[in-house]
Every structure is written in structure tokens, then in C-alpha cells.
Image 1: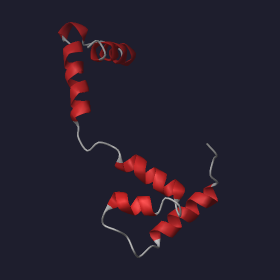
Image 2 (image 1 turned 120 degrees about the vertical axis):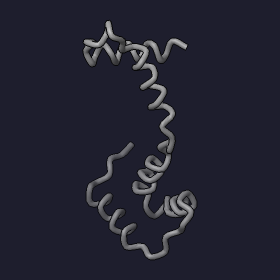
Image 3 (image 1 turned 180 degrees about the horizontal axis):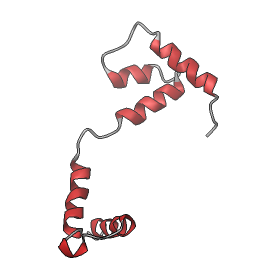
Image 4 (image 1 turned 60 degrees about the horizontal axis):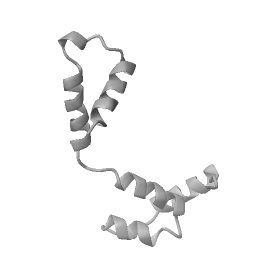
Length: 91
């Protein structure tokens, strides 16, 4: 993947910011602008693909609650991360 110069990226963002015809349907809008603003459209796709739910993070917190107990309250961050990873992936 070729790197884009900061000038090109800045020009794309500037073009986007000065657009007056902005569609209300986000996916159609960025599909139409893919050719004109390729890097900005790729960034928009990444940002808009982030799930709007917190289910995954809640699941991780739940796993943490079963790993950290009164007897294990002094676990280091590294150990906690490893234990949560193992526990979460043992399904």
C-alpha cells in the first residue's frame, strides 16, 4: 500500500470540508466520493464500521470480574491481560 503525502490528505479533507452537497445517507455519500476522495473515503469507512454496541466490552468486563477475586486482587496488568485472554478464548 502506497503512502499518501500529507499535502494530498490535507487537500482531500479541505475538499470535503468545502462541499455544499452532502448526502444524508452516509454509505451512499462515501461510495460516490470514493474516486474523488479515496483516502478520506477509506478513513470514513473505517470510522463508520465501528460497532455502535458495547456488548464486546461488557463481555470482557464480565470475564475480568471472574478473574479478579479477593485472592487475586494484586494481579499485575500483564498477568490480568493474559488471564483474561486465556479465559475469554477458552470457549
